[in-house]
Amino acid sequence: MLPHRLLAGAPLFVMTVLAAPHVVAFDFKTVGTTAAILYETPSAKGNKLYLAPPGMPLQVMIAYGEWVKVRDMNGDVAWTQARVLAPRRNVLVRTPGGRVHAGPDDTSAVLMTADKGVLLELVDPHALVWARVRHRDGVVGYIKVSDIWGL
Image (cartoon, rainbow, N blue to C red; front, top):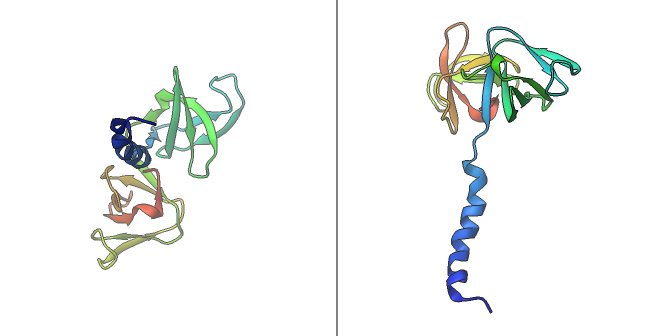
């Protein structure tokens, strides 16, 4: 039989373990001013997979010396040199017809509609339901977090 003091702490432990995945944030970076070469392995001698254009957001999965393993919006995984990534945050619209609103709600005016794959600068990286974004044409507004990738 277990002592009561261990059992008394069990609900707190279970709640902490169950809540932990919700507080883990993904690390996203943006390709800098020049295109990034994405490789199959963490080496410039590895097979080149493709070029990631400037501004493209990538999820950083792991760092290995001067290299980082990244994932793109399609789920493809590759390696690139950490120095080609910038801390500036961009996101990609993941749904066709993503709407950028004047305010953080469905009833506010629609400022623009963005096709899937449109690049937006992330103005507020701490968004939960609505993200404040800026389009390259200068439009600043809010889009649902569920409609973008890179946050």
